[in-house]
Length: 252
Image (cartoon, rainbow, N blue to C red; front, side, top):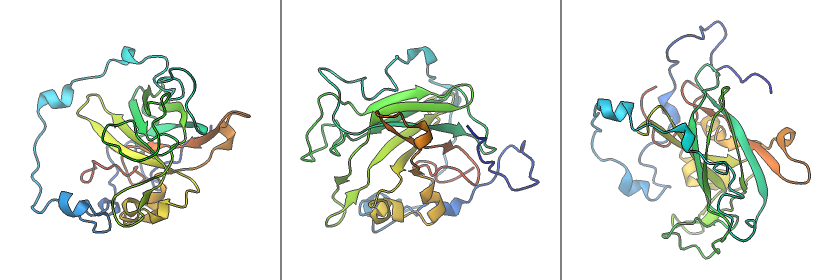
């Protein structure tokens, strides 16, 4: 595996505490083409609330709580067979602003099934529930910040935005810090999906390069012959090449 790209310009020190990111990369809270943002966007100035000591220091996650199938969505919910759909491997690094892997970090992921339906009581899409697919899992990064999981490639699904609106296939991610209150949320799309650049959520991102960093390229080098394709999705926590997080709109 080649060394990750460095998120610094030539001659810039790697040991700086923070590398300032461009706050203009994030979509504005009010994005009319994303219909529900009209009601959900704030109409008054935001108030900054200082986190308490208990919020910063805990609760914490016990690394021994992960089971052997937590990162295997093909098997972790199977009852009487394997789930239906295209088997894939998703892998990558959780990195800091200097390109260094972040070790022992909890990464969670959840998604729709191959038909585009979530295992959630409020999902009323007509695609069937797969009895052998739960659609969620978690993994810990290793000492180099690497993670991976097996899953079924999710399908696209319609949503009530405007007429004939469809969400591209995607997988949701959350990354935890030292405590559960330190959580960043994002989502990953798949290279070559024609729905990506028709999606109001993606098009609401003002910087195309930032949106492209949410698209996982096909990684044939990591594919398993006669079994599954692989996609590479690196998550960058800070800096100018930071992954676009849904719940981190201000700050470094």
